[in-house]
Length: 193
Image 1 (cartoon, rainbow, N blue to C red):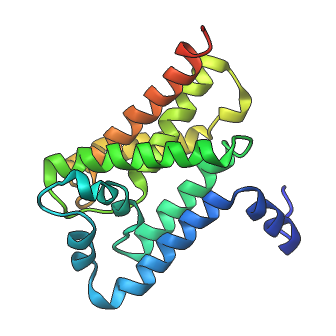
Image 2: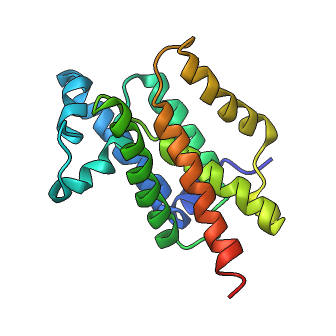
Image 3: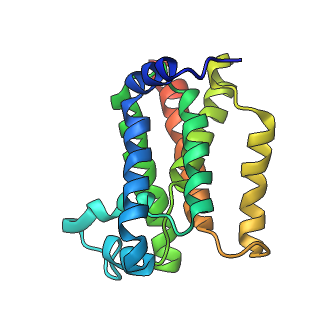
């Protein structure tokens, strides 16, 4: 079992500043705006009418969470999946984060409008990247716990069924697809050149 001492945790955090920064920003946004109502935040972050001058708003919904369970679940999955990518440069993770946040959020916005938020689109992109990366490279670093894979993939049809409430289903699908494409381009296209 890995050490959970304060020194080990601090060392891990220093090696993964983007992972920690995203968690902090999500927590601060949740705490700061909880009193003002998260519905107002969704409208502020993502507008009804899209404009390229405000394209940063395609990324910011990833920092919005509606309940403590929503926040904790997304941050836990973010942490677990980022551990599989810890050997990668933080700039690579930033690129994957921005591209997957923008595309997954755009997917959701096009179908449902601005009333959504959460890190799950990015988490599904990480999952897609790791699944396809493992298939193409057989690198054990990309291997994700089969139980987590099953749970996350099961959430997609459950989300569409609305048996457990409303989910950002198109962000989940968009993220999964863009993550898989990211890995395919990296490992199948660029490796051949």
